[in-house]
Image 1: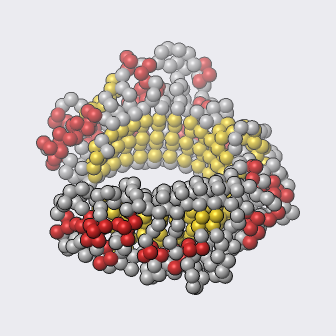
Image 2: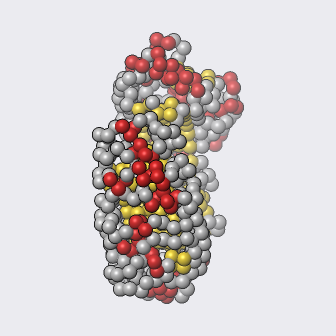
Image 3: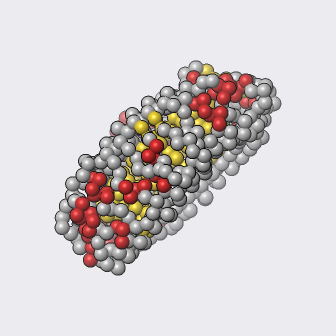
Length: 611
């Protein structure tokens, strides 16, 4: 912190204060700053702070503060005495305490005098054994407790006495409690009366029942609590969203499923998925689901709009006929064998994301309104079924990685630059510019054989283009038909890891002569492992609308040799250069010698440092 900051008695905004060891940066510097308001984050409350110094900070005399975060960098039992005198003014609405090292919290934390406190976060308190009576905070709406490594029991003192505790609490999150075994239940009517969301995450020793007072949450997430008895789920009749992972569900017939809108089951051993399929009446309310494997039934017609499948290992058979209302399908890992009768058309499917090996049967899927297609890691898929390819005219976003179908959309050369014949790529069955006429975003990654774009060019409708790890295509960068992309706004080019195989072509002049579209607003260059000369004067001439330029990990990239030609586009607002020492050195020199060249920039980040 700047020395003498405490003398700025009229200061109203101070979002962060890092406690230092010097006399001019200690926490007592906050004493005269009575006018600060809004958010204040105080960090490094270590051995640098004594209770006497903390008292001098006079947080209780700062009524304008609405949000306060107190963070230790590691501590001991002495932290309690410091926190005791750091009590804020009663108008606080949000409070966070991090890395607190004492065993107990001071009494003021559960003080009912905080009549407007709505959000409380307690995290990384490794020695704490007991929680204060937080139930007395009558206006508290969101409570998060995490990483209390030694805490074994949350007892009745947590609730406090008198009127029903936590009557305003909406969200309760308890996670990363490695030794926590028990949450004592007050069993008082009205406890957690307003609770809508309950999250219990990675509490492997937790036993017993769910709190009985919390009978009406709308969202419940339980993850990695294998010893928790979930029989009390029968009381959660108002659930709209249920997520279960690494838990033990017995008996199954107690799980309330009717009325659910979102269901997430990450492990088939949980047994919940078979239960879904045994229901006499389909879960017609369900709109979003995440399964470890798709339901193997074609009898019920689900009303799902969003379906996520996180498969592992064996082949997964997908009964597409069961999901006629599907809008979004996301499949990750494993092998998906897509089946369903001929003539099937998912008229409402807009987004399809496949991360894994995909097989289509027969004529495949007709998705005439598909706008987003993501296919990564499907190297065994030679081509989309013909019927499906003919329905991609509405596609707006395409992202592909190791997907052989790309050979049908691009025009290839029969020989590569090493004069080796590539017979399998001699004929292109289709041209991208006609098949994907509505495409606005294109991302291509990991194609070693791809040398050029389609003969007819890329779709003129493209607004975003991202090319990564395509070595032959990258070496022909100056032949890319970028100028014809009259709508292009975002361009990202990522280098190829194996370009070192071509040492005779290790010098690349980027954008030598009016190759860039005038509509470009964002340009990002990453991971160029060979020598690059960047034509900054061409950026100045062509990119009159360029607002953001990012260059990272281009170790041998530099601007053209002539000093007078080196320009930063006047339209540029943000410049970020990282891991590119030659460019970083030039920018730093300009900051010192000729700052007028870059004075128009709103943001400059060089090597991770903001200027």
